[in-house]
Length: 540
Image 1 (cartoon, rainbow, N blue to C red):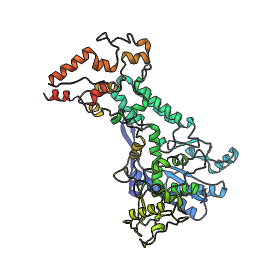
Image 2: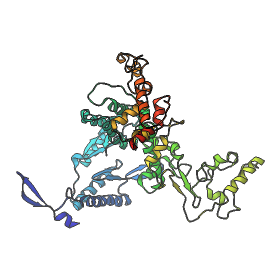
Image 3: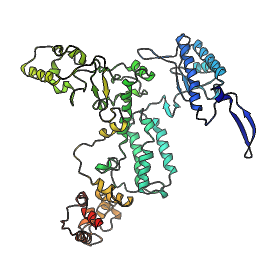
Image 4: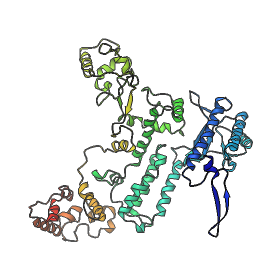
């Protein structure tokens, strides 16, 4: 390690030539593959020094929640946040510790970039503490690791940074060089994912979601630097998956829920992590024994309150694997069948005393004679029948005393949580949607501009005269007359299927394919039969 630091030499370029080689004795090289690793080692030394001082009760840190969890510092790359009370002794200890660390490592704290922030402290007191530490006294909010701290995530101003980033990115794109396909690609690969950093921690207000979607919508249909154009297809339809008629952008609010759900998955799996201990200390444990309490009454600035609101949707998809049965609730957790036992046997669930009883307390290690359901009264005949059915269905269940219970995610093959696997079921649309000819449109061997036009035709959103009469009446020159046949009104079905000129073309195509056909009711039905005549023509 010493060799990596001391064998470095630098040169100064003068008129493009290296002059005056300087041999380094300390510090890390920029661009060296080892530098990030060495920096992590050095930062770990500082962390261990702080922990040692904290163990000796020379530095109190900051205590959080009911359990008084101690937080002394957070580190990320070359950024470090120290937490302390206002005792002068603690601040002096922290200052001395940084001086010692500087002498050991050769690194020095940049006081010009260091600030002190107070919580419920007046500015005079804060300035006095800053003078002691030789740093600046600053106020909230602050921007840390790209996120604003100390502001209300429910306020629209909190999200101004996201809106500005999207707007500036749009301003940098020249619409002149973009076709419809390019706009779709940029929205899917860039605009859709730019807010994800914020969305992974904070609940997106509906008004901000509308602003972001409006920027995406305007870019898709109008481009940049041009006048307003018609938004031919509704945005909620555009956001649907391609299989059911959309372009696959996805709803930003549902994506926000899926990203927040990742924290609910990580919480019981990272019990030793500091963030887990802080959340547990503040909110307490949920009655299910796995999650944090969802009945959150805390500051609106705390992101866990928004994360807890996703619990109802998240819990619908979690499943349990029974080991020793100590952490899985017999009645309320989803571990046997497609529904909790309390839902499968509601009569028994109503009369049971302890609804949160774990499996191990019901079955015990000496099955089959250890059922301990503890009903609050004698069972009726119908309830006895349900109990017999329950006992029969669980006859093959055996507990493993040495194996802990586990929770898994059934929507992914790895049984681990994936944001995409949560987002897809959230995006399922109610009802039975009409079958959309997506494969016929998007898998066709034709230019993309033809595919996109056929997609508009399938939705009947082409600017024919009947549509212009609704959207922009002054542009519908002859709303009741088709310009081709001069008879019927111009609509999507008429123009592409029923017009005398168009239907003649269809007859000719089917004659070449040597097929008889009956014109369908509309162009959508025409696409749904996948136009096998074109396949036959291609083969001929």
